[in-house]
Image (tube, rainbow, N blue to C red; front, side, top):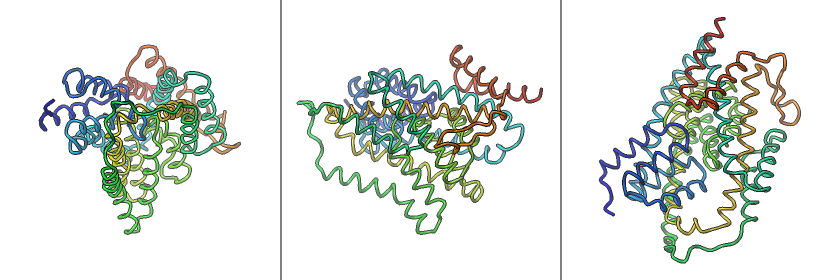
Length: 416
């Protein structure tokens, strides 16, 4: 097949980036329509194998799928084009929303409207839980891993990376050894992999080294944390939100719980991967630290260390796609991690609900069990949550429409 022209690729991947609302499932469907159905750029088999590879890797699978598609068509430059056009539109939206929120988010009227957005967030996380669990929980091992990961996070407060690594090891041990398909092409020479790691590893580390040499401790802490997050982001953004929230709210104190929930709600309204919530959080943290200049610097740094590793993973693993797709142990590890992610999202769902429905929650009462103050129960938040559930689960309305309606309803209830 003759590779598509650069203008045509820019037009198609740009449209994918602007249309990428609705989470990874919707984004993957849009890419399938544009790249497989409407154009003979990828075969069905190649597309599905690429999707499997991206699910194996840490990071946002939809963005990595766009990167792989571009790489497959036009090499590294094509991969950069596909990945950047998937991320940049949403990143620009997030930058504007985060700065507006930092300036005006604490106004009483804005806070009242955001109560409706928080109620919608409870339901959208619950929806994610239903979708993931319906596909991931197959057999006793899957249910056991999901329950164990929920207890490990909600009750014991164990680190998220430890849970993911343990689940992957269990899944790999449970898998059967296999070998690559006989007709798989040989993997590239080791020099190719080493060169890729050196180039993209250096790009990843460069801003961290720069802020360290300049003595910016806040930016260094922020960059190191979001770099670590990029390595353990298996199972999508919802899987790491609880870990991110615990770290940025409780450990570093960069933002508070309400701001974290608001960040997720606003990130849901923009195109691009939901993991752009990291940019929103970093922008708020930078604004609190040094004002608008710090906000922009922190947001850009979070973007860099979140998405540069995605290019590293794809350019490193892409040539091995055929061999990786035939490894039962690797697929077993992925299935186990996905099952554990169900428990992680369940923890996030309960945690968000408690912090929206109760004005005061002690997150360190017994072990790591959140202890809500029953006297602080918020009836308005409960009403808004029920309405959100009816609109999204029963009437199947989208998140943006539901969020706008609930923000208006919150203002009406607040005026009564």
